[in-house]
Image 1: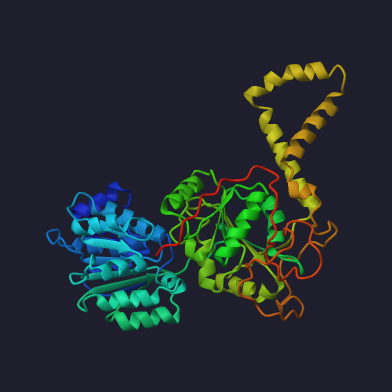
Image 2: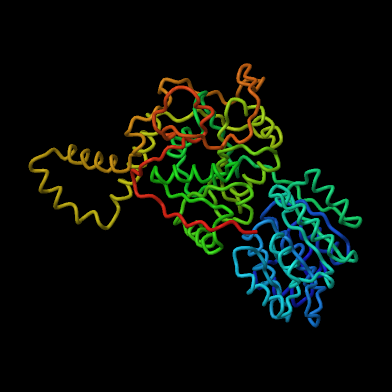
Length: 514
């Protein structure tokens, strides 16, 4: 049994506040990190999103801040605006009724407003590297009183090219400080940062959760040769029909193109990226949580800080480069005892990577082929039957019975029911399926539960290509019937697709900011 927050060293007042907020028992990372930070030790924490890192570093800092000193005493650096706002909101809750103040500084918001927050005497600042440097250069942010420094999601700062900025900020902070670094993964560059700027740190690690079979169903769809992933995704989505899904892609360009094509096909989907204004980000997050948008397309970097409960599916449109990132992605579904599904689109040259992920998780993925036209239509008919069965018990049924009584004098009752079903089916049948899209033939053999032992598709030695989600030039939509040649190179067709159904609303993008 874990110790309580008070037993870890958190004050009775703040422990009571946490209990009132519903935090009755520390998480693993909190139980390990809080006592070390309270004892004045530097800490390196390896833990993925959703494990309670924010409380692990903010609670001990809040216990030690001087309310009477109206100067910045603690800095928390985050890679994205979304995460800065999320961390700031949590810290503000943990402050409670004390006289401490927290400020969030990030691009996309008026810098004058943030300068005013600093002048009012914020003791803890949560910010992105670019805006922190901007305020340092202006002389509005001073680090001479800083005693605590936190790097949150350090690996993403590395991926986004912020490490030089981080080193510059750390170099300006007092040497007599306490530093904590938290990251989902620990690449060599982060280890070098630790060795340079942290003083004999204690390492606390929360083991990456293994995807249990009863929690996360891992599925791999094998992409046929000369098929693009965008072309393959459409029948997969029709077959799987995710209630809510986070679709991971490698690049922002792929995210934009894929979102556009999914919207043109009539799906409720939007893109989550760093160029959105903060208001647009918040609106999209609210709409996603309220199921007004079913699917969101994002890169790993953009998805940091995007936390949604009860996510039914995670879809790896592009496989990540590392096993750790894969586990981090799929860990967003199957939470709180719920079942989840992780779908990966796997091309022939990615089979070895797919097997490496299987070995790491000690699980066998379910290997499937692209759904055929007959399978998709059978799926739609089953859904239609379920809807009819539900309607038969509905209150509105009686209002339609007089119409049937009138028509039954001229037509057979079975024929009337069949005609009604045909109308309903045609209205819900995907437009791209009606247009005669090239799908696998229905006579294709059922895939075996495992690929061959060599795992290389019978001798395929094509090297893994980065940027497999990048867009190509020209050509027709990847979901229309494509011509021969260059299909592997054109990951997403650059041509426009005329909407067949009503498309989902997309937020306007804003200029990139730090």
